[in-house]
Image (cartoon, rainbow, N blue to C red; front, side, top):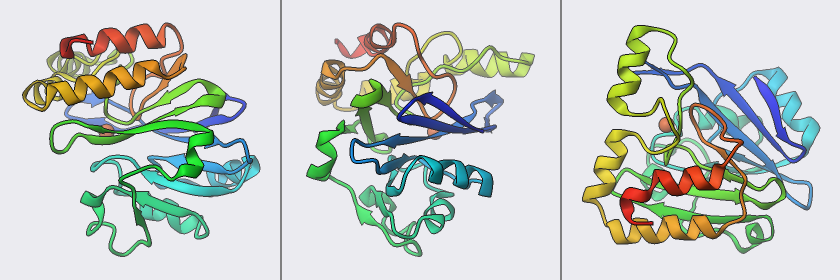
Length: 226
Ligand SMILES: [Fe+2]
């Protein structure tokens, strides 16, 4: 489902289940000040969704932001052959059949519209994080999320076990990895993100955080000492 989050920011959301949890999956489309679009963590879309995107502008950049959100990105990229697909070096071989460029540092041209950094967590948790200034939105994938109220007892148990149902933040598994990773580097990354001007968090799963976003983000990573 294509929906507007702001006059320059849209999401496409689709059902997605993982280990008993209703995670949902979300890709984000941000419009830059020059009118071009950047698609973040996209997946396969319908013709209607493609038309809805094209109505908003020209997709110039497609970002595979972390090592797990890429499996359908080729399907998306083939709909927009003039766009540049950017991926992490870890995905170089996995995306061998899709033209792409490695994204280890943000192109200068993005700086006019986005704050961004490559969150350098434990291996497997490197993730590009963006702040879209026009919409004051922090855009992340798996760095943190909050799932909607569980619909079934199994959903409830799985959400509780992974500690993702009540408030925004990294899952229990992610927190465990972060705690054994380079905590100082992770803390610095979080401090940098907290300096950005955002009032909304748009994660790759679960709910869009529209209220108290920055305070919730700060609390979520308190275990790193921020
Ligand atoms: Fe994910």
